[in-house]
Each structure stands twice: as structure tokens, then as C-alpha cells.
Image (cartoon, rainbow, N blue to C red; front, side, top):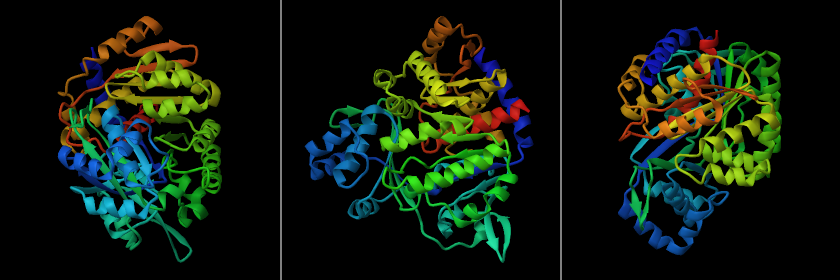
Length: 453
């Protein structure tokens, strides 16, 4: 059944996506410096930094990185759980430590950058991207295609490819430490491949918004029919107030114009910021989260036991996920919640239709293609994921959803609306995990609205 549904969804999405007129992407773009971890090297570094101190932070993540044990403990936390996490690196000595540690390759980074290259460079959809700092390196990492940044030139607002901007601004570098499934240090073995991110820039964490966007946002919004907001995760109780005012102003403009807006959530250490995000979530049409992110949100809603259940099992308990999604929808009024985890995706929507499930299937193929190939060059590359096997472990998840909610062909009617489920395709040895979550969320959101039309 699933193979047939996958094939049909792919053909429908490929036909529908070119009809999308424009997508606004804001706010975070950076350069990813990717390091593939070596077990012996990591163990040596942990020993030198103080094993006991490092292990303390491998159990509970700090809010930010101010010393080397925070960094190494965060890496260990991700290895232990097989889950991604990202923390802001506040300390200059730690930033220098990471720079000396080095990297194996440089790639486009930031949710906006990754999504712009996918939607514009692969799917051919016109996108307008907010790029906090347009350095020569940053601009060079954008693919060819209808990817634009606004530029105020002599009182006129022009939309040009980032490479044509001729910017010579700062490089904003995020250090990404990747590990494969089975990676082991000090007896801690990774249950699956993933990464830890240390973000070392001062623009994205403060949600710097370029003057072109502040002064011309209405004109920018007029050129789009969908919007994806990301990059709010590094804000803190000390610095969130002013940027959130601007974000809410942008949301109000988008809402007035009837433009559906997706919030791509990311692990947000600061509880005050998480509470504020929950407070304004009703201004978004949609939100995308994984189990760690969903747990952090329901925790600030006072559902501590539910939060614990979400990270207690691998794969994550689908019944607990649905309960958390229903609670989040009830409190915030957000109309679409897209949950993605290793092995399956769920969407809770206040509306119904097969297009919701089909968009998740397309997103799963796009993610599998990226994992398999390392980079997706065009829409036809997504076809190459059709032969990747469907996750067998998701059969138990599907069975439980059938028993609990009467799921049929991945769709169930709930009091809160429609629940859509798809088992994902698992690439045994992915070339990289960086950007897969952004691939999933942007592909699902954009294709769902394209398929609805």
C-alpha cells in the first residue's frame, strides 16, 4: 500500500509545486562548518577538559555554551540520545577552540539558507530570503535559481540573487559535529546518526533583521503566497523583546494579506522565549517540531509528565505525540502541527483532505533523497528515493494509531480535526543529517498548499 501511495504523492507534488508563486523565508542564514567526529579524538578532548564535568552536561544540557565542558557535554548528550541539539556559543575562547578543532567541509547553513536552496534551487519556486550577513562565502553557497534578496538601491527596492548583491559582510559560522549510528565513546553508543550544533555568530542569536526587511516588509510580502519563519531558537529572556515586536509586526502584515505562515521550531533552551512562542503561535498557520522540541513546548504548558513521555522511548510513543499535539492546538489555535521524528511523521490539521498525507509522503521522499545523495540537485533526484525501503519499525506505530484512532491509509478523523501519518523511508548509511529536518518541513508545508490548490 505505502509504495503505491508514495509513487502517487510524488507525481502529484511534482505537478503541483511549479504553481507556487513565491515563498518568503526569514530570518536565519549562516555557514555550516561540518566536522565528522572521531571517537578517539573526542575521548582525548573530554579527558583533557575534565571527564566528570563533561559528563555532567551530557545528562542535562546547559542553556548556552560558556566553557569547553559545555560544548563537549552537549556533543555527548546528542550522541547518548541520538538526537540533534543546538546551543549558542557565548565564549570567545570556546569559539577559538572550535575554529582550531577545524572542519571537514563548509556548507550552506541556517534554516532559511537550506530551505532557499531546496525550494528555489531544486524545486524552482521563487523565494525571497532574509540573509543577516551577505558575505562572499555566504552568497557563494546559494544555488542557481529564483532565489532573491531585497536590495535598496537609490530609493528603489530590487530583488536580486545573493551573489549579485556583492556583499562583503561577516561570515556567520555554526560548527556542526556529526556522528553515525553506533558511534561510541566511553561506552556511550549513538542509537542513530545525528549531530550537535554550536552556533558561533552574534547576528542570528539576536535575531538581527536587515533594514531592507524592516522598511519594506509589505512590499516583500506582496511578492509571496506562503511564508516560513525560523531562527527564533537562540533568543533569551535578555534580548527577545525587541526582535519579537518586529516578528509580530511581520506576522500581522502576513495575516492581513491572508498569507499562510509556518513556524519551523528548533530546540529553544530559554523557557521565557518558549513561553512567548506559545503565546504568539496562534498567529501562525502551522508549526513544525520533533520530539525534543515538542516536549520542551508542552513542558512550559505545564504538561511535565507528557513531556517526559515524549523523550522516554525510541521510537517516540505516537499516542503521547498525538496527545501533545492536541493540547498544543487547543491552547494556541494553530491550525496545522507537523511532527517529524526518525521513522514516521504525523500532522494534526483543523482541516481535512488526502493532500495533507500526500505532502508528508513527498517530504519523506525529499528527505530520503537528501540522505541518500547528500544533496538534491533537482526534482527528478527525489525519484531516486522511491527504492529506499519504508521503515519496518513504523508498522507498530501504525498499528497503535489504527487501534486508538481508526487510522485508514494514513488518515484518521479526530475531534480536533484530521490526523495524518506516514512511515518514512530510512537510508541505512546517510551521507549527512544536516538540513534533513528543514527539507522535511519546507517540502511538506509548501507541497501541501500546492496540492490543495
